[in-house]
Amino acid sequence: MNHRIVVVTIQLLLISTSLFAQSAAESFESALIPKKGGAVVVYSGDSHSFTVDIISDDIKPLDHPGMVIVDNKTLQFVCIGYKVVKENGTAEEIQKTQLLTYMQYELDYVKNDVNMDYTDLHKYWVVINDKIFLLWYYNMPADNKSVLKQINLSTLCFTHVLNLNTPFVNGDNFDDDKGLLLKVAQTLKQNNFKISFDDLYKKLNPK
Image (tube, rainbow, N blue to C red):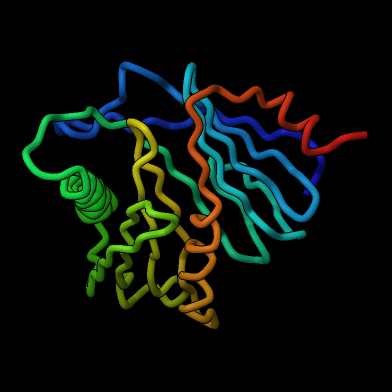
């Protein structure tokens, strides 16, 4: 990967439900910052930030914001702001409700806007470093001979959902594709401060 910062504005999807909408409190920008042995995906707002690491010597940014090729696999990062609502239940139950609502929004989008009939939805709760993630995947239509499944891993970061996605294609190993998302998720760090992209680049790439 070229040693330069790839900065994109996070696309916050505005939808009609009361749960998912752009958070008025804070907006985030993202950057893909190279470092030895891989890269760091950085999301920074006015007072919070979070990062995940990609560990690979073969990382190629794509023109589409939030998408990279890692060892010949497409990896997509989506960050969507949501409106915090008051709900009954434990903190864990509320987080699960938020994540399931996000998943259902994405599925409705696939079905109604993309006009794609997915099948065989699977979803599982995964705890990584004491943080709740929703692992979910589904089959693509039978006439799609290349991409067989879409695999997603979602979690909450402050007032946003961070979703990692990779397509399972003909010739892939499903456990390896799922493992790619889990490996990235294990590096997630959340901070109560903003991050300067330039300062982090200099720190990770000293002369």
